[in-house]
Image 1 (tube, rainbow over the protein chains, first blue to last red):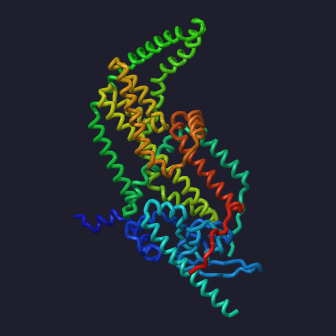
Image 2: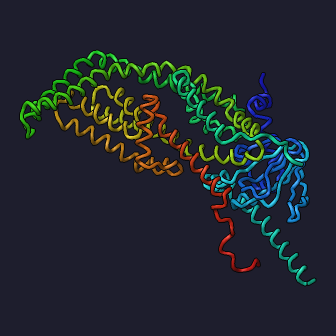
Image 3: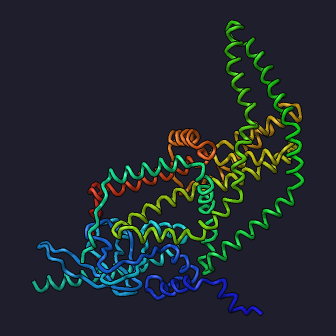
Length: 167
Length: 360
């Protein structure tokens, strides 16, 4: 006798469910329902980067947001003196390059994988297409991005005010 | 840490290699036909698979269920239309010589009338019309053999779904492998290019398929209501030829109208069929085109025509069908290439504009 559980196992894709579970754990997709997360799995492109592989270079035109599933990515910037300074080390579950989703501007830093890293790319035109075809998904992501940018801008304004006060 | 240095091939090398590859593909185009048709089939069917895949179902099982469902629907449709199809095929093969003779007779009568009306010496007018009409009639006599020449395409009927099955199964993995094999710095550009091509091509192909089906079904029902003989065959001809823009309606009017005129012996029967196909074209323009054309690439009519002529010249009927999709890909390539050139060469202005009030 075939049980409902074995039938479900036969039909359901465990790899797809694992990807969906990963997306669910990310703050940017937390408000999406099961079906919408499924759509996101299809929209994202996954790629594995070897240690030392450059993901993008400062000055390149940004066209995608990167979500780190596993591994480690270093964000660096070259100073006017030519010296390279590490800005941040991205950890699994974090994302970077989000400005590319809003504007096609040159990247402000270089991203390099420091160990074997699995990344998911959300391409700008895909997000724009989602905004048209499935506005709830697009608006949820845009809402998160707006909050993130607002927080960063507030922090930058505060820092500017503090440095101005200190002369 | 720097990426291991790789020697980058020059633009000229890439150009030559791509050129040679394209020429080689052109030389073996006959062998590639079922693969091209299968790729197009998989591409058109894929969104239905993707829709259910988003619910978490396994791709392989979805494809198998899809194939089984299509087979059942196909068998059901054949069982329902079997009598009509057999009836019409028999009647058409028996009457084809009569139809051709009638057309020839009609043309010759019209030619004689026109010779009398032309403001030219009768000998000159007769000679001029003879050469034009003669060429036309010669072409008409070759129509049945040309239609038979398309039959090998039907031989792909089984091969296309078979190859299409593997295209459908491996499609997303193939794309991921391509992304993985690409130098990391060009991944964003590659996805950009693929996205643009997908938008342009996907909407066009799916749109044309919807239009062809709608024209086929509407003309079958319309011709059946008008009591025109061979309604099914004319509807199939009209539907299939709709893959070439505008051709479906034109053929529907010419063949369907001619058939009605011959069958009922009155010009009003011809005009009724004309009205039917004009109605179908109008409904297509009002109801379908606004949905289909919303996101598809818009080609200039001249480019449209040039693509059709070049496609037909190089690849025959299949060239006609795939000329516009190929033009869509070419346009997407040019657009993406120009956008890269603009951004990389600094032609595009990146300065954020309109900044006035401070952040509050």
